[in-house]
Length: 144
Image 1: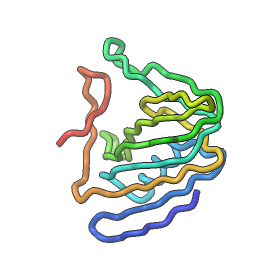
Image 2: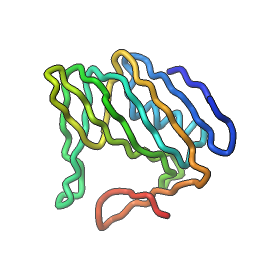
Image 3: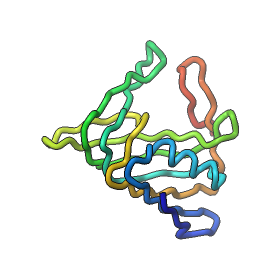
């Protein structure tokens, strides 16, 4: 991964260029932890050799994985970074993936193996965000 801070004011802005083979969710999380990002919006485009997105099943209180076992375009990857209950970066990312035949797959990004690249922009918010586990829902949501 290559990274560059393109604005270091009250709202830092980072551009990350992930390398082929990197696992996107893990790489973005580790970067946010290292830079102490506790509130930010995330956007990205690029491609994956394979990915896993999820659809949240409220009755089961967990994500049902949707495997994407082929090369796909990351048409849109949007989300946020907040601070989790453990004090570490907590990502919430949604992806729309374009398949070779023009169909789409989408959901909560669980994992994605970058091929050939993923271009990520992280824009910090002035306010630090906190994500708290909601036992009634089975997921962690931003608490404001």
